[in-house]
Length: 288
Image (cartoon, rainbow, N blue to C red):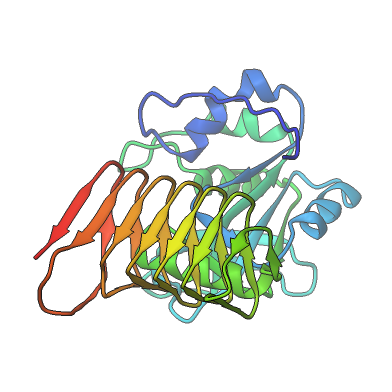
């Protein structure tokens, strides 16, 4: 909807984040750029982050978040007064700070010469943390921006469910564009897109339902996202993400689940039960 153009550059082997920058150099040329790892979700805009980078003519700025247990992350040590980055430590057993690397960075073109001289780490990758550390060592102007709102790493099913909950809670507004019959109830902040149909059902927000969706004889509870072209029939769904073209039929309760594209989850007659599922694309799950 935003009329953006995308260029995809394939990384043939998983040789590290700095390697990804290296193979993109021909595309990036001398431009400054934002590096944003795709499994990160943050609760604030990067605009202030970018504005600081431009205004102060920095070589790099990195996004940090204070965490309870920094041992699982790359950790930054900064000058608290100036915000300058002093050093980075990868997953330290004795963390020198509680400031974890979020995975959102801004660089100018000086990073390319740093990466060109970079040696692979023990795991055989060109590490972006090593590149930033070398930039700091070379007296580059590297600052930190500390994230005040939430940060989620959506690499696992439960992380995606939590990210869905956070986004729906913060951004959903009530907007009903679908056909809803008189036997149905829509409560709270619910978005339902056009050409969808709700019959004899209850939908409670915050939740979001895409185009060409049919919800029939069903309950859709809070924190549920249903993509385009789905069917939810004779079922209850809560706190779940259902991707395009999938069908949920006669399931007593689908809770905290992630359902891939074009999948079917259906239940035959049997004992009532609540389900927590992670289902890939084009799957069929039949329950007794």
